[in-house]
Length: 303
Image (cartoon, rainbow, N blue to C red):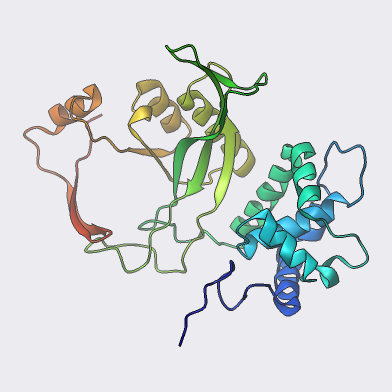
């Protein structure tokens, strides 16, 4: 029997989501997160409005939840009538309309919806029990979302190369929950006995021109704590963040920090080795990273 290629969404959604599936998802989001009210708060700078912003937001959100691979696939769903009963008499957006709206959308109003969903999720105890061994762990990392030589704006990072080329880039720092699958705890006595925590994105912060990634990450942490309060217990970062000002600032926010260092030449690695030299570790456990078994030893730093 020939195997058919999956067309986008995971089963049982199929190549085009059914009306029943879309209505079920919309009913859940409306009853649990009051999504209809939040979507009507979406704003944009379009001069000619043919499709209301909340209709576009609804289509994009459902497409994201049902794992549409591209705008072209989302347009195919729209043409197939998957959203007709969801939005009623309103005109449905096609690919060009979605593109034009994204170019003129007010990003702050979209992030306000994300913050409202996260606030409701916390109220409903979605993150109870933590995400890794009973701790709620959030990863901070920077990424580049755009690089071009054709055009620039006031928010671009400018890179001048030795061969005379000039490139313009946009970079952001994102904060996302780190999820650990249940059953992968090894010998570690995990306090987490509940359901899996979703790997939600808490927020993003753009890097300003001539600004480093670490400064943008600190601004993001302070903004998230101002919006959500104590939203996590531990922050994980890479070696770029192994700087005393950053570590002290995060500790001042009441958060723990885990820094992954692979190069023993870092001064902070040498300092840590000196602090634990001649001392027995206070705790040890065995865990797994993929197919590898790892022994972890932890020392308590002297104050």
